[in-house]
Amino acid sequence: MKRTVLFILTAAIATATVSPAFAANFRELREENLNKVDFDQLRDDNLDKDAVNFDRLREENLNKVDFDQLRDDNLDKDAVNFDRLREENLNKVDFDQLRDENLDKDAVNFDRLREENLSKVDFDQLRDDNLDKDAVNFDQLREENLNKANEA
Image (cartoon, rainbow, N blue to C red):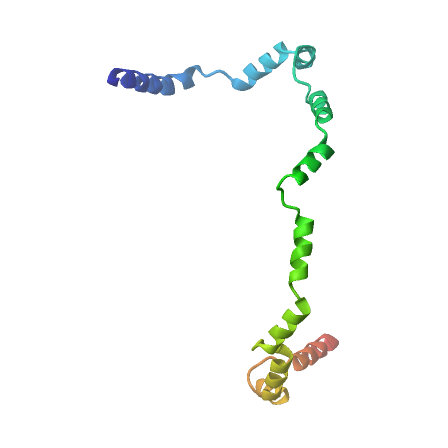
């Protein structure tokens, strides 16, 4: 086993060091081989053989199966009829009652919460406080830039 591994390793090293010196120009080799093979003729030869024609095979198999009959057979079995199941479950739940129960619980009334929070903040005062700070006064900045543009 060790001899085999040693032989393979030696061969790999020898190939890696010697082969670049004898490496063929692969582009030229490819061009030579491309000219030797007529791919159109090869394609035609293969089509004449017993190659699988998947379109024909699909058509043959589609005609062997009656999907309507298969569907009916499966419905007769214990398969789940989702339409019937959905109807049964819809009749079990009174969504109007469920909605009313959820509204009666401690659910968040966002409209009421918004109104409460809006009354806690004086936005005019907040705006004035921010203007007194070093915040940008866009109206003043706009006026200054317009005046500079008119002067130029």
